[in-house]
Image (spheres, rainbow, N blue to C red):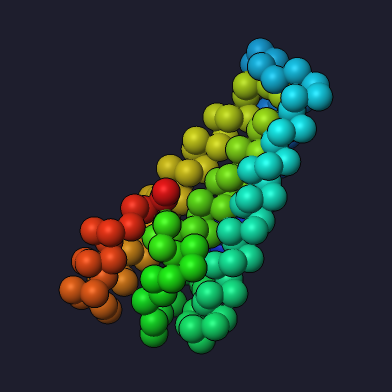
Length: 148
């Protein structure tokens, strides 16, 4: 299932839904203030990992856009730890937002978001990489996990 919406659009919608759930259907407050400020850590980590991955794509002169054919299989930098660092970064940002909001309900969106990214983007992109890079992809896939 290919989509024309970019993952950043999904992230923005997920953040807005998280905020809406927090204010309109708050399920139990789990992190009191000021401890919720620790949510800034996953937000900053998510932003950093996305910038790092984007720079790796630019250095390698390959596309960052989903479903576009890559001409290089990037295996260094943040790609040494995650085959999908940008989706990991987006999910980290969303988890950080959930922590900042203090209630349990935003975490539902974080879980749905991660599953959606896997179903809508990651599986298709990884299949495309497997088709293009064959054994090199299989070796990389066996060394580096999908998320972390």
